[in-house]
Length: 398
Figure 1: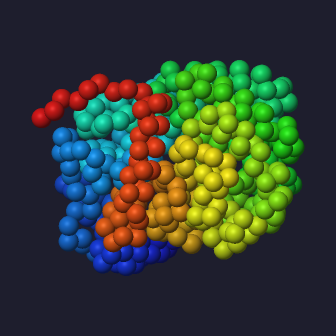
Figure 2: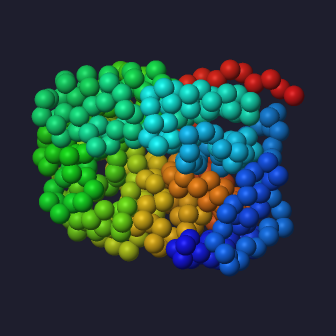
């Protein structure tokens, strides 16, 4: 309870300094649930709604672009009233689901059908992109026959079998309405003190890992699902777990180029649709005090050094390492300012997700975020939605 109170106070302070606008999580429209806050929590009232509704006939608006670059998650097994508001008024086009949301494969299918119906009712111009973390092994969200073994185990059977396994996974996910898999893991695990990658990696040898990552990307595409490389610039050389505290990778730029870069490059050359940046300090790449996903010099390497033209997305901004230093709204603005196109909020509590959206609105209007660059990011994301999102029935204009 004390941690929640601290988070709420930090959230209010952030809003009070962004362009003079105060947006807080207590300002809801009448169709939204009432937040249950700890006793004694001070909540300020906002002078105006955090999200300005737009009509279905509008051309691209600021709200369209903000909604495009945010991915939300929620707890529970049913679409909540708040998620409806974020999609219909906030124009959010990305939803990340986890095993507790659906429990069974049939439950996942029901979720994606409801989301497509919601997108149609909201007259979204692009499909909602439903995402899951389906890496294999310990990170399998869907309890189904197509679940794959860990990447380490799969890699031992060779690139051809990795591609076949991922083809099977993607076919199963596509049948259930999923458009983007947050996989494969491209980290080369070189640090035995690593606490988060383990057998999620294809191994410790860059020359062996790179072709396996490429095979995984191609297999996902074979089955009709988009592929996401993660966790750039790499967690395999760092000790620790960003879900708990931001770790540090002390490798030099030359070592990184020889060890971590090849697998990401191979995945990009194979056609990876997205690359996920993560929370790690990498002094050798100029990010000694800034988490890599908030570091423009690190994020820009994907464009300048690897030639990647797809969607750059963040790892979850709700990980413990990030949350200990940044509020979710602050982290969202920092991520976009660094050059990420798509932000995984992944908090599960949509009160905070809405607050993050309000912070982006305020940052654009104050000039802290470049409006043109935000629109360019939205274009990249919308192309991804059009490519892999499951099409929805046309809406009926009022």
